Length: 181
Image (cartoon, rainbow, N blue to C red; front, side):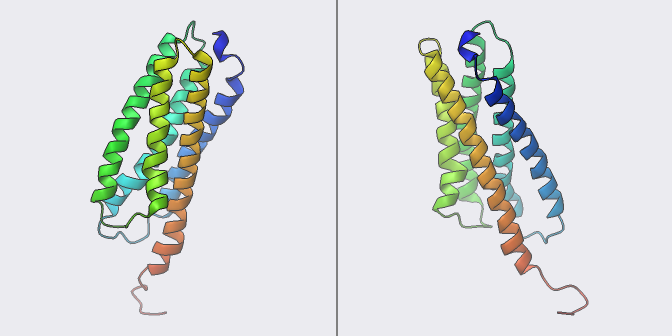
């Protein structure tokens, strides 16, 4: 499809980055698994960690879809549009989870990176599908923007989670059972 010409490298880079970052998320979760579990940890994980992996997964999926040699824009736009709608619905679930969890009181930066920006990215993805048939170039720019936004949101959120666990949670780790300082 001619309108996708020139996008190959973009989706190879973005998709590879998302795949690698999903793997790193799993490594980090494994490394911090020995930290004591606090009340509400599962709720906080559902509100903050799981969406980050899903955003990386969405970027990986869009990158794979956009790398398929489609004969037209209809099929890929329907697929990225469906992903955008699913993402919007999922962000509403994330919003409810963020409000419900009691392990951590979100500040503006948390609302921005865990709800607002991903919500905007999924809306742009869905809207790009709507205009793809009449404005293919603009739609493809929208898809690229949405995937890049989700990638950077995921990077921010993963870093935020790691620094929270390293500097906040580990600092509050109870003394060992021997009573030594």
